[in-house]
Image (tube, rainbow, N blue to C red):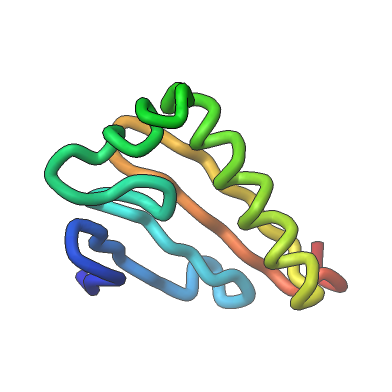
Length: 88
């Protein structure tokens, strides 16, 4: 397990040999800290809206690096998978 920044832990693996996989096991890219949704609530955002933004931002970031990305949020953490675009 690794720590990205305080309150956000993840595990990374190579998946099936051509994909990189990351599972956020505590916190996520959109929220962190003791009161993780406080900032979102202050801006009038729901957790679903924050997750939707995060998924799209991750997809666009990966695309700029010529990668294909998928992200699946879940109760046990967010799962991200990235593969080279030409292998998708």
